[in-house]
Image (tube, rainbow, N blue to C red; front, top):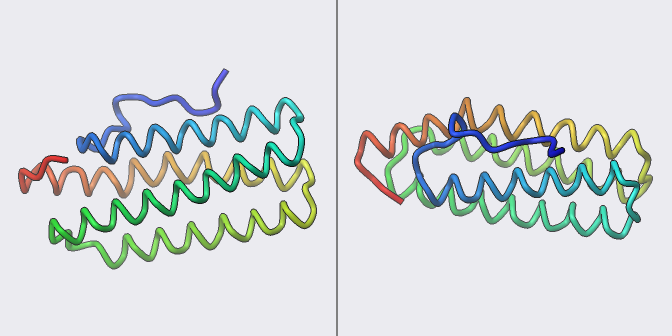
Length: 137
């Protein structure tokens, strides 16, 4: 059973951003499955690196949309993205140094709660702004 499930309530109303969010949920689920099934450190590490790379790409795409749309909260949102990136990189470095079950669990728990909270509290504001401006992606 997946740790995270996409629900319509998570939609920001911008199909390209929703598509990215669905993929991020999938990566978190893959990471959770790999850890739960005690797959090799190589497999877990590969999924983690893919998740980090996709997250960076997503943030870049999202920030470009915000800039193009004149989103007034861009700077604050960008800082939130940077803080998440730094926290995930810290977890990844810790995992690579000492791949304990505790580090893996903390990383997954953080990613799962952060992703859902960020979509609901931050990205839905962006979606509402885009819809109000009639900007469709």
